[in-house]
Image (cartoon, rainbow, N blue to C red; front, side):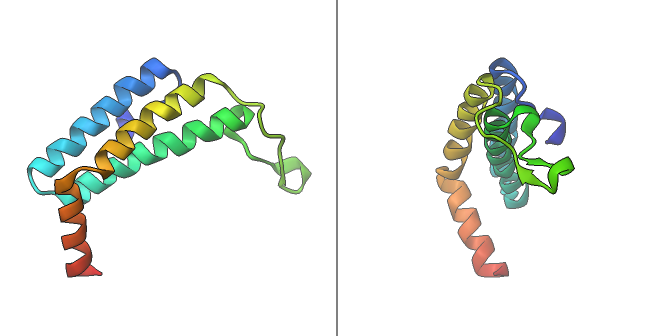
Length: 112
C-alpha cells in the first residue's frame, strides 16, 4: 500500500485514495480483516499527513534547531487541504462499510 500512498496534489491524492480504497474492498471481498484495516489506516494517514503539510511548511511541526519548539501554524500548502479532504472522504467511507465493521468486531472478540 505504501507504494500507492501519495498526496502531493489533489489529483495525485485522488488516484492514490481510489487505489487504496480499491485494495480495501479487495481485502474485504476475501475476508482479510488485517489487509482491509491496513488499507483503512493508509487512508487515515493520508488525511492526517496532508493536514500536517497544510498547517506547517514542509510538514515540520517542530524546530530541531530551537530545542524542538513548535513552529508557526498556517505556513503550509493550501493545496494539501484539498488532498486531505479527498483522503478523509475515502477513510470515512471505509470505516462505514458494514462488512468491515463486522470483521473488526469479530477480530476484537477473538483477539482482544
